[in-house]
Amino acid sequence: KGEVVNNHDELMSNFFAQPDALAYGKTPEQLKKENVSEHLIPHKTFTGNRPSLSILLPTLDAYRIGQLLGIYEHRVAVQGFVWGINSFDQWGVELGKSLATQVRKQLHASRVKGEPVEEGFNFSTKTLLTRYLQATSDVPADPSTLLPNI
Image (tube, rainbow, N blue to C red; front, side, top):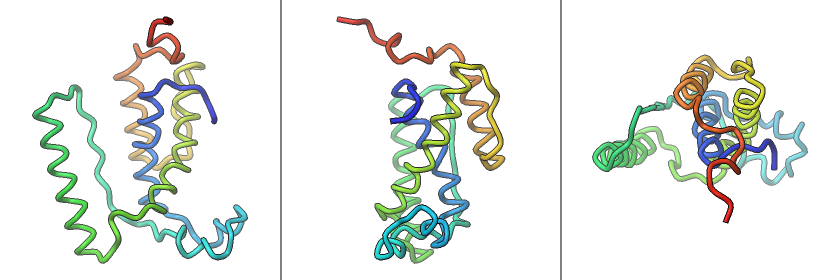
């Protein structure tokens, strides 16, 4: 569904969408405009204004991945407890997936058509997307070129 991007860009679409989901949230009014069932609105409403941290690294190895996992597991559990929020809320994950559609479109447009990152993202997300595209400029836009046909 949506634009054709390689698997890595699909994952990165969700990565770049999460800060916007946490920053902006989703109001009951927005959900009503999307014709969300009334009984789901309390579950899909998000206040936003939640801080987040996104980290891009030039390379990943076992040591760095272990450090990142440890940091994030601890951070998620402690912050959720301190702020009184459910850190493992599935509806919040769904909002991030929804916002990832916009990121996927941007990654596709940038890779295939050479378009710069458009407006519509917060400054942080726009900067992250631009740096990611610069760092991965040698990644093919067409996923069929990543693996040989057998």
